[in-house]
Image (cartoon, rainbow, N blue to C red; front, side, top):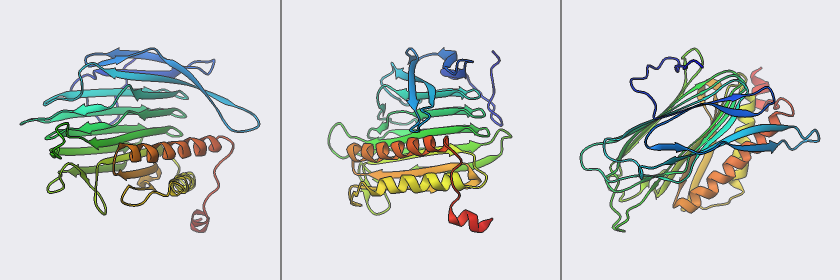
Length: 308
């Protein structure tokens, strides 16, 4: 099979982990390409079947892969690159076996890059466990996504802080960027933030106060009218409101991304327990809403109807 290259991006180095998922004529998704080098290890493909909640009981075969790391986390001057491709109509999920520790550093910085390409009508979920920032940890994180027409991609990007000495020491720098492009290399959306704790010892600075956990859930899907993305945003926000968590514990909300390319949920939480509750609620709302889209086109919001 030929090796695809992400549009608009020239790879200066090969990926340590390179996976490609394809859909067979039977409807089953299988792992058609698997290249794994240190520090990554991929176990066998776990077949899953999610049934859509409808009278027709249609099912979508889904392949799940759990990625393990033998390195014990990210260390100073590490450069790790993971690449995932979902071919047309493939449905796959990639998770990690455990959280990734970003260890203490003295002078250098660790680089983590993830490249995802979702071909037409594919569904790819990239849902790794959180990254844990240790004192003086410095991390540059980049996620590049190529989103083809009618593809759907879920991405979890979550962070925790921890000082094993319990002295509330600060991490160094977290510089994270996510780029979403279409098949023609046009930039649809970009999210970037750079966090340096400063006087907020050991925590991630939030909207109203300091929080110990920070997360993002992106639901990337092309919708020229924005009707589906608006429906998805409403469903997520409605589910989050039911949690009824005080601002001192958690702060989260969903919004439509620019470029009509999806929905973004930003989460701030006091600790990993609160973050997990928000994340699980948001993911469940996403799955239920996306499943409902298979039963028929989502209704346009009143605002969309007024624009038309």
